[in-house]
Length: 51
Image 1 (cartoon, one colour):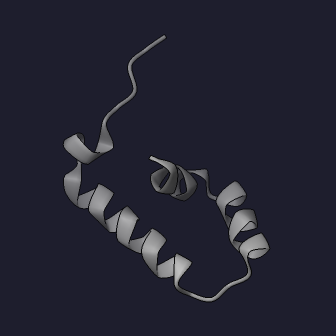
Image 2 (image 1 turned 180 degrees about the vertical axis):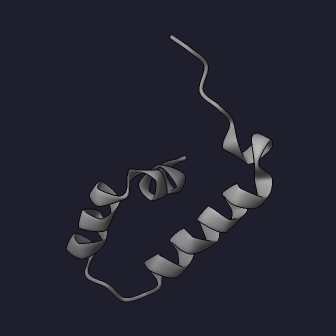
């Protein structure tokens, strides 16, 4: 199995931007079921939240 890229170290500005986006979306007031649907449709954004 190959080693995973550590995005926070490789691209800290991009990682910080993705984390900021996740915070903004979380504070948006959207229903949790709609947020989960968005996470399934946009797996890159979802992965940023879980790391």
